[in-house]
Length: 226
Ligand code: CMP
Image (cartoon, rainbow, N blue to C red; front, side, top):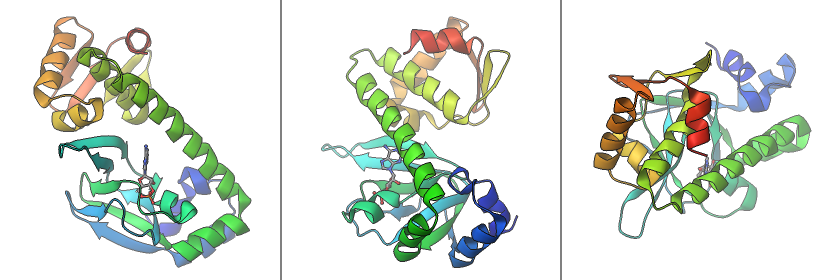
């Protein structure tokens, strides 16, 4: 797929004409990252905006005792790196490639002039930032719960909404993140995630096959964990 074709499928660029998209696409550089590579380091200076073309990244911070805390997992057509370009502060978090990934990148100046020239991009960006803020609010709320089973349920419900597909009330997640990553999202240990997923299986709430996961009645699952 060409860079231009890819941009047509990126929600924040969706409202632009092909000729405007082509102008933006001509300014973008395609970069490759290997699985596990640190793409952005927290507190470093922000110079670049990224749109994921293929693959997946995690947004992380390190806790005081050195544990990785995962704030979000971002996939194809999602963007990152906008915050430090907008407020002039250092990078707010680390970005690490969860898989071999590629991203289309824009320099800081080109990103800021895009926002000025195309207010539709600025509005779409704000909409997405509102969605992310709501998710963060929910995440903070869930971390204050002492019950780890509940925190893991909330994390799985979030993953189901972000990367799952729903059909007749049944949600399928093709590639569930690794249990250690789910633990780092839910603020618990890998062993507790493993035990809790097994418990959900025993209760016939969900089933697993390798990294695939199916939740039988997503509406009631969500109700139990909201
Ligand atoms: P920036 O601060 O430039 O670099 C790190 C990036 O991580 C940041 O821009 C955002 O794009 C992204 N990021 C930070 N916090 C979150 C979050 N809670 N959810 C999703 N993405 C985030």
